[in-house]
Length: 313
Image (cartoon, rainbow, N blue to C red; front, side, top):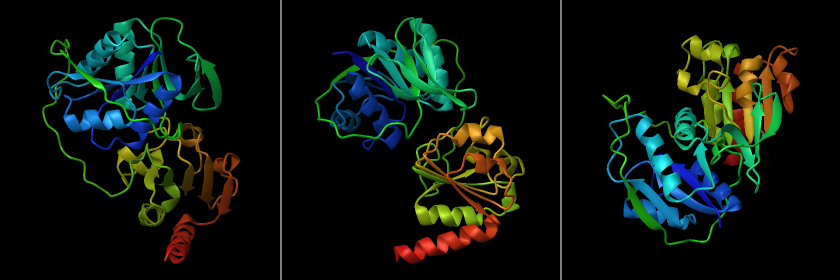
């Protein structure tokens, strides 16, 4: 059976939804093999086995001192070691850069922004700022593919007892090094790129994101924002959704006070259901919305949050 290599950059005893999606997709394509971004601990190897991984590759020592270069070498070495038929990575900024470096090391084709991969390794992806869906195929080497979150429904797998192999990646070549690490404050909300529900705000909120946060907390959703809101300093740039921000595909996307410029659409228009709230009935966002509400987001969102809380309790 074909070996499908899955890169898990931050191994834990409870892999996240995006990681489980990658392993589910690997199961559909062949035999999942995991490469961890940190030395293998018994607990993380056991967690990979519970998700059906037949083998686990990991660095012999920590990679904390280098950015990207060490991880790219690790993935490339693991792909060679297991004779991988394809390599799957998360569709994050780091995942895309690692994919590019791995593609060079393996002399392979790289495909990003995938939403599905068929048994013959034909990849369905979005192009031209998400305006079109195409089928692409790597024509040289081992396909290196980054997969968008929420593209695959995680499925249960038969547990396995994976073999473990340590790889020497000490000579990663020239690389930037990490001089300081600062922990990101925990918000209690799901990560933006992994969330099933996202509530985003824009210029129409006039600087007050509390209605967005209140509705997000009522729904168990992540918070997002337009570039106008982040550029104005109302919320951190890490929350930006769009062509120059994060690309997401939640099951439900609620955008409030966002006009819907093409740059924002590029980051969210593959959402399964889009609900738009805007006081301008001619706003472009209504062109792609499944449901639209013409009204002031600062009034509509608190009403929605209050009704959801009432029904919940």
